[in-house]
Length: 202
Image 1: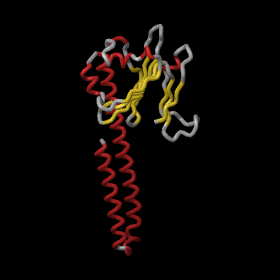
Image 2: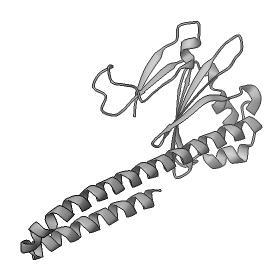
Image 3: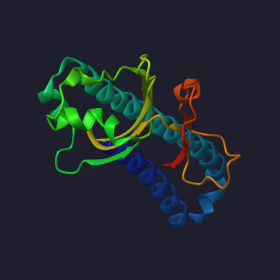
Image 4: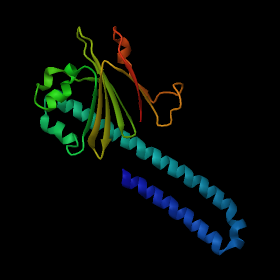
């Protein structure tokens, strides 16, 4: 996907550079080229915008599929597939919640079976290289969880895990709390007891 993005950028640069060279070598033709140049620039901008949007949409769809494949392998206890989806050399893991709720880490380290806690995502959404998933255990404890995955090259390179924590995600240029959230967990609001709330900037 990155290669495709570079190709689009390269084509745009070549086209614009060619026009500039023509105008510099033949200044008398600038008037004749002005209207076609404006039209061409507008079309080129629309094409680049469409190509980048299409590339981002494809990337997000692929990243979402990686995370869904992880949950599917986790549910079936397929350790080999789970490990194959994780970037073993550069995996960053952050956990927020009671230490006793580190079910995923316990499974991956062999300290607990895969069905000690069932992670069934209720919603999964991808934004760029981030994939947001949340779920809930419909048991007397009524625990809710949020996973924020970072996917690169088809591999999971980072996980932020939250248990019984309400999470709101903002962009990198958030100036105040009035900015619209990019993503916000919903299940935490259904937990009867009070839970902490966090804001994550990406």
